[in-house]
Length: 129
Image (tube, rainbow, N blue to C red; front, side, top):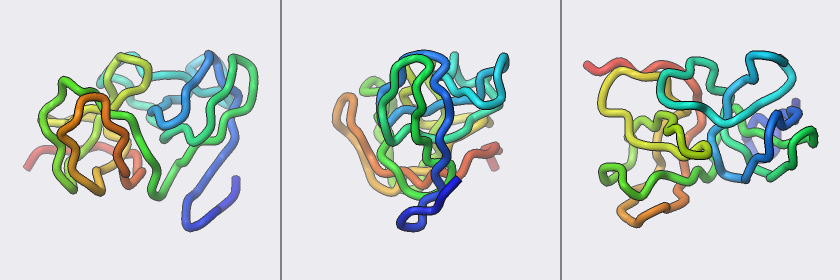
């Protein structure tokens, strides 16, 4: 683990080919591996990839701090501070509108389809108040 520019980064083994700027979760079969989430029911969100990797290679993951995340273009418009949960499509993020496990919160607005936006990565649980 290392800290670079106030970002906590850890290298993991990619359980599958991973693209940068995507959300990842722990691989349930190997605690040192990460993979894409299968949907918002995944509870083991690790963070956001900051490098790409083929299956079996090492991938750098932002576990805390600011990172770019690709968000779904069909999602509701995102505003700063919106919680971001997993979508089942290749680690894309989408606005959490109900209680869910989230990767963090948006730092900026997004209205474009398949935008990459800055998020504050802080995996946890978002409870609607």
